[in-house]
Length: 408
View 1: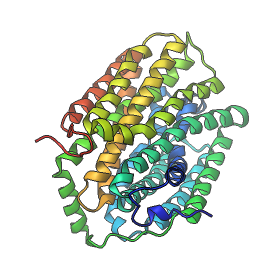
View 2: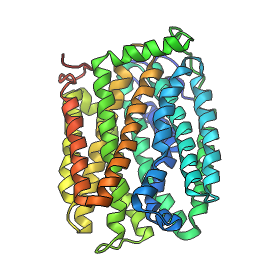
View 3: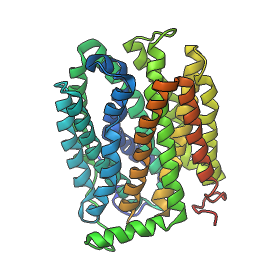
């Protein structure tokens, strides 16, 4: 079985293209199996709302409660990251993730459902944070952009394939079967990590006390590059979840009346992102972090006016632009965190994850209220404000290609 030797040590200056492709494909697959549970359930939001007899906003908050677990666990895991073997930690997190996923198949009460979603978020965050730390610590600066882009590409694929699987499984075999299927995917992710990743060498510079961890957090917050990246991540997922949570309800209502299986196929809008996101590293090298980020946000913003008309092809075009733009922005911001952190990248990754998923949770809650009270058009306006906030923060990033910095 192939081992990820190139990630376990220094990466040569010139690697064969085939080796880079194999490594990045594996990174993407691990990412896919790590977060496939996170957004797949959004494809069956209307069915879940009917099953539990609650409003769209209430069900969206319960489903996206996983972002609460992601946010706080991503930060909490940094307290112990300096003592956790990355490979073993990712493997155990994915194995534990399968437990709450399987319990969701019993279709418990809404409160228990939300609690299990929080637990899913905890284990996904642990795997996500430790994998990002692994990449930041083991990849050379030259390989880092491609590795992080590959990881985000796996995230993109999970958004597409996970939603398609969820919609198909729920439509043909029921909601319970859907969650049982994803529990099997979680276990397969743990198996993949156990047989492909090598044990990493932990950084020797980290202290072991809680006070030391808090000191590291303060150091990261004193870094203007990281502060900007954290804010950008918050705004990006705020906008993303605001779009892809509540557009479901627009699609299934008159005049569109999209059915459950067709609703899953709608998420083929993520397909272009699978091909564009891996280019993030090249774009950053060519035009710089700032222009790469602003270009992605501009694409996402260009899709917003297309979401207002009640025409399915036009809405789908808007969703394509939204997906391409936000995933490109996320890839750029994630790469900034991995390269700009001054030591202890696990803590920096955890703080980014906290900000990112806190933005998703906030976006779901606030935009859910807006959607229920004022409708979809007002929701789209809120999404645009979040993208504008990310763009303003992006102006603080260094404009010159090949550098990661911030303006004073």
